[in-house]
Image 1 (tube, rainbow, N blue to C red):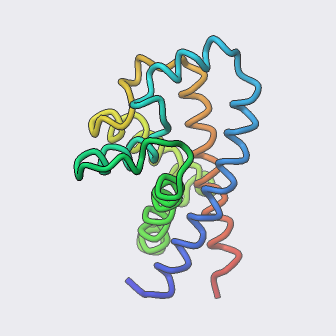
Image 2 (spheres, rainbow, N blue to C red):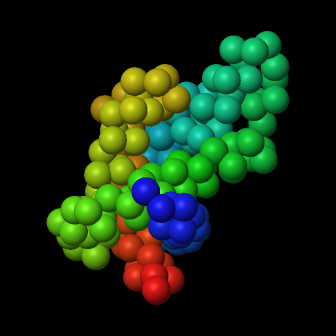
Length: 160
């Protein structure tokens, strides 16, 4: 691992998160209110996974710091969930070029499956996948594919 590659990956991951947010918010704002209400009921604490994680940690230490959404800690965790994997991706894509498949779409799809469909429910920071309407899954997949492709494009743009 090189510090430069890791830092570039983290920066590219942050850009990917920003792009994901733009796309998913556009999709979110066009969804049926009944589906959005079902999604809200499925969420842990009625919050997105990053804010739910902050709330779980805050409650574990006897604090109510994570009760409101949005909050700075939740936003920081949200970006960290793109920056950490982005740093790893930057290193691994050099060793394993197949990870770049679909110009980062494979990477983004993998993040969606691991983070949204497996880890978040297991950690109790999201409801079970079946509790969410299909639109939430599509939005999550599309958003993560955008994240992966923008992370890859950003890395390509900033590499020497």
